[in-house]
Image 1 (cartoon, helix red, strand yellow):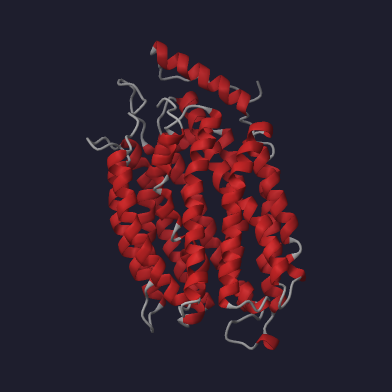
Image 2 (tube, rainbow, N blue to C red):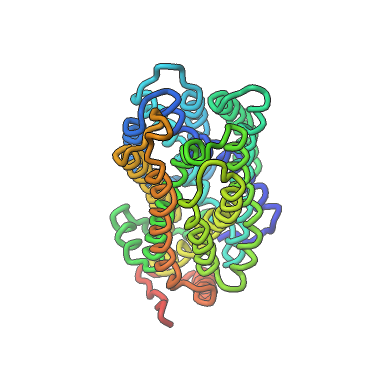
Length: 458
């Protein structure tokens, strides 16, 4: 495994995440409302189109993860996938964020598939690459924090564009065009920098180790207790984050009566709080462990969300305070779980001798996308069934249902995630034992086909 080379190495690797953060708000916050409301496709049709696109994307994730683990080229294991994904993703984001009037749900679904597949080609190898950059418990937390710092910097840049563009006469649709142009232009430079100026660590599995097939890898992963704990909590938390994300604009527009500049400002506040919160969660994770710090963040978000159903028209300031609190929690969601995932990858390598970081991150990505797809299917059809439609006058709309689905349902999911992750078994002490034993094993080059796993009850 690569030696830890410090913050400058992390910066060079993590800066590419800026362009991955730029489309986040357009895709998860603005896009569903654009197609369902502005372009008139409808809530249910939009939800189904995005769900089908995500379903296709879910199928591709394990294949890309497995392929990137087995790939061996003169350019590295991860870089060829990232280069192909950058090209495909750029094409997809252009057509998806610059639709003409009269487009159908088929248009949305097709270009969403193109973009999501390009994103998969980039994201899974990119995350697996980052997991191999350090073998230290806090070193991994720092790498993911730097990467997610740039991710959120991209997100808040995208959040600021609608707020600034509205003062120049652009509507939300015009802002999406600006974001797509910016993402493509900046992406060209950042991905060239990543691919040509950041070296990939060499594959750490010594020659002579038989490569396992996909079925054996999945069977081994299923026996990984920390991974099961982490995956279950991440699924529940992703559902908790996904539902309010897709309803964010509708809630601000119809419940709070927020104007376009106010909606842009609130979105900016939420994501800016996320970037401010990352150093705090990194500090707290050193004192109470990463999984406990993540639990504290999720609990804070739950407490803030309980006040949302009490809000009404004009409660912009109160909702802004809630956005700050939940945004701070977002910083933990983005930086701590991937760092915990890197620990799980090392544990899997220790117990099985298999290098499968790409496959593990593919499963992680699969769960994330599945949760987002389910969130759209839950949120849009449910509020429509309960009597909410953006086409109805305010007095005829069921705003209570919108507020409850937006806030109360996510709290229930987050509580489930907290209960799971609080008892996560792989602590910093146990991870340090694993690291020492693995280093001794690699140093002596005594790697056998049978592994004796470390008991998490030790």
